[in-house]
Image 1 (tube, helix red, strand yellow):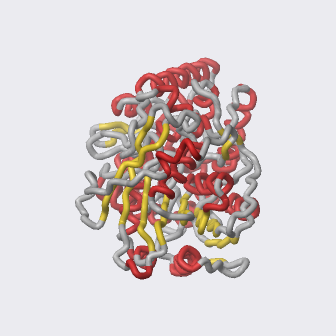
Image 2 (cartoon, one colour; image 1 turned 120 degrees about the horizontal axis):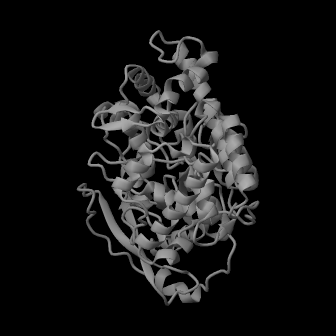
Length: 516
């Protein structure tokens, strides 16, 4: 899925758990889309764009350096006099008012990631000191997420736990496939029935409307032009904003880019191949260790992994008071591939599985799904599916869906038998509202040159996606040689220096710049 993963948080989660201490974390990423519907009347939206934000204390953060507000926006931008909803916003105001450039608005990914939480973390991080001196760092929770209201609700916490414990996705028989489709319909119905405004919110939750909210926020912040930082799915938001409002962009930094011309099926197939590539890199790292749980032959790690996790399909193992299912083992492994900092814990988890315990892999899967220590879920997965299902043309042809599933496994054999979000094509095929966007090559005439950062062995957003996005947006490409998902502000001096120079002064790195 792919909200931006924060290696430090992931490491803390695994250390504390055997441990189940999680923060809202990313999920594999969505195929980029842009607006494919009538444009709202700017005059009718003035009551929203001219609103004054009422800043006050943040309920979830005691740090007085942060203040929070609610941005009022239309539920449906084509009905500006109709129902309204609110978008949660957090600001870390710069103390250096004499050198203030404006606001730096960011999104950490998802769909479903909390920009409020991400802004609070980034604003206080050491790599972002230079940015905090020049910008108010601002994060917002997109529609249906976190502090925004209403929040999207599909499954209860108990239902999500039960869904994870059941390995129905591993059943590829005709009966198993029929059950998956029935479950998908039931899931979509629950999303519409349990969420305030129901289908109307589902129809207006996609990137098209997040981008419109972002422009209202830009105006309410008092910024003539937008300075934006997007990670993973956040690059999709940035791409769509660049196309809708190219003349309102000051600077656009996109890290962990999504290919703007891949539909849902192709993006998933490409992404699974990226996970396999990173799994192979993990295998090389592991095989060089005397304690490698998958053995010392790096060419045999896929088979060793499958031999280890396949028995879980019929015989889950204890994980504290819970059980480790096959799907959770796959999910926890995929989660750990987002950052090399988590590889040690993945190896520990696989070694633990050999001993008949699944606590560490369950903790990694919890982190991926946004499960808190008290058993509550952040809701990232529900928002993820809701946005994906309206962000590109629906695929309902079973032959196309099953062909995409087959190609996923061909590209990622270590996932054979089940993979995170394989059900996505099934869910979207029966979604209760139509798509609001479509995949196409962006038209960004008049856009200032953006900066795109792409990592050579990124599992969730493969390197080629960043290359393609840089070409489509006529932007500069910065290459990071590594195996992780996103890198800006993670402490790599080469990347951080280039990104900060761009955001503050508009200085782009030299062509073909590479960092490692």
